[in-house]
Structure formats: C-alpha cells, structure tokens
Image (cartoon, rainbow, N blue to C red):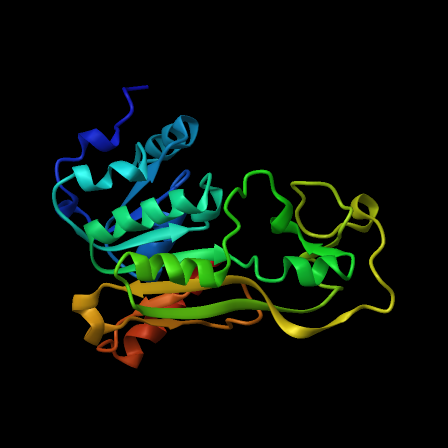
Length: 260
C-alpha cells in the first residue's frame, strides 16, 4: 500500500465542509455527509484504522486533533462522535474542543455517552455497560461538557438526550459485578438482574447530542431533528432554520434507505 496520508499533507481546510475527529475507519464521515451534508475529512490516530479507511476510499488521515490549528483555513462544522470520552483527561477534552473551535465557522457537534447516573445505578447494584470500559478515560458529565464549551467561548449550546432507559430490564443495564468492557446484557454472561425489574425514578439516557454554536452564527442555530429520539440511538439529521420541511423529509427518507 502507498504511504498513508497524514494531517500534514492537508494544504487547507477550506477544501472540506466538516472535520470528524477520532474518525476511526470513516463510517461516521459517511453518516454525517448524509444527515448534515458536505464533504468530510477524518482525523484518526490509530494507524490500522486509517489504513482501512484509505483503502476503502474514505478521506481519513493519520494525525492528532491537537494539530488542527496548524492547517490553514476553516470548515463549516466539526464532529466529535463518541470520541471525547476516549481522551486521557478532562484537560485533553478541553484542548481538543479549543482546537476545534479555532477551525470551525458554524458549530461543533458532539455525540457523547451519558455518564450522569453512575452513582445512582451503583446504589441499586447496576451500571450502564459503557460506564465500565477501559477505553473510556474521560467520563465527563453534561455539565462538564457545557463548562468546557463555555471556556472556549461557546455559549449558545443545544442539548438533546437520546434513547431513554426506563428500567433495569433494558439491555443497556448490567449487574454491577458484570465484567469490564461488556456490551448489551446477556443473562448467561452477566448473571441475573433484579426481579421484579427496578423502574427508575429519574430520567436516564443512553447519550446526549450537543451542538455548540460559534458566536457569529447565533442567528443560524441548527435544528436537530429525529425520527424517534427517545426510542432509537440514531444520530440526528441537522438542518438550519432556513431549511424547508420538504428538505428534512427527503433527508429522513435517504437516511432510512441507507440503513436497510
């Protein structure tokens, strides 16, 4: 295979509409292109994932998001799709969002797992499976994320909770002593859950979709629209206030067709 393209090979960000940080093999780039629009460039530190993306013809380059401000130009928006929780610390998250704010014209879109209810569930002998992953080094809460965005000069923030977890029977809920790095509940692997099921007396969610709007675009706040936000984990279709309803319906049809 030819030598991998790196972030240092990018002459200007003006050639792209958005950046996907921690892009992996590039699947989220395709999703964002379909649901939000534009040409995307992925930044990924894992060489193997970059190799797979480039082999598939997806524009992902090898590099760190901390070098973004070294590239001339800007994009319309930056995506952090289940990426920030993998960074080593809250300070690293702050630095990445700061770099992202320097290279985007309009907004930053963050898809972030919910770490709001760890102690609440622990008291009931339960946990969400993603709250006990070795790779999740920065399990920041929603208030942490908003604090960081504010520190980066981003005060216009929109938050949408995604997929509501109502009780302990949900497959995303595991017994507290289930092993590390697990996924959906499997009775044979994870053991028994409470009987009868515990109905939660607070709203617990799978994740949050967060949009932080750059100050100069306060009048063009994008709209996050969903097919079924509280029952599915799909990312939103993001449109502007100016988009017509017909445009939204066409994007929904296209997104649903691509899922089949």
